[in-house]
Length: 292
Ligand code: GDP
Ligand code: K
Ligand code: MG
Image (cartoon, rainbow, N blue to C red):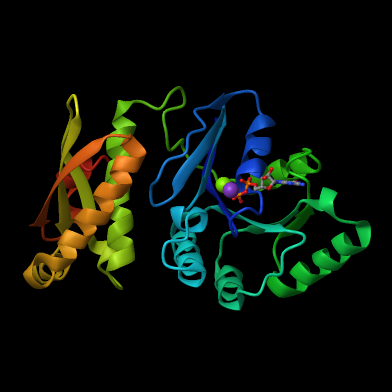
């Protein structure tokens, strides 16, 4: 039997209704599991499982909590969305003025299917809806445009249908029953990966893998040991930075996010290791959790 699975990124400014829409979408289905806000490269907001499909809804911390100011955080969300979203739902409030052209350019260039979701039409009128549909049609040329009210569950099933129609054939990414303990390690390694993506240029993030070698949940603190694996000494030097400055940054930011995610104090150890040509070495791939 074929199986569909993929990541759906909800992107857009704060308060346009991303979370409300996600809840409405997930509410469409009866077999929801573990809708849970988690800070990772993508926050996993909810996973919808069916016997032959798995939809992983996510958005990015940058969009929810702008850290560097709107412009930059929007860019970082667009960049990370481009890395691995299978479907993008670009959510806007019908009453918002949208003028971040660079974000739109990036979105227009992605190869993932995009739907524009014009939300909060209950706070509007038919003429404005028509006007906005034309506006987004011209501006972004998306695969689809939906005018919805997430809050009142108006037109939300059409968005769900769009997702199902565009979901790729893929085995499930997560256990189809529950999120287990193993996933905490996974999310913790994703947090480090996110920092690597944010703090380094070009090929560095793509040549990097993160493994969690120890995860000890003690009474008052969680002790985590991690390894950042790179392919060459020169990359190791870049990761570490002058006098260890860069690695220290990675560690500081990662630890903060981990503490928020785990709701507990974290002691984080990081080592940088060179494994030449790790991508091609099967036993290493296995130990990183990639099955063949
Ligand atoms: P997010 O920051 O993009 O995740 O936005 P939220 O989902 O948290 O919604 C922000 C606010 O907009 C909340 O007060 C929601 O109740 C409200 N909201 C969301 N969708 C709608 C809608 O369709 N109509 C109206 N009137 N309000 C909405
Ligand atoms: K909000
Ligand atoms: Mg939200």
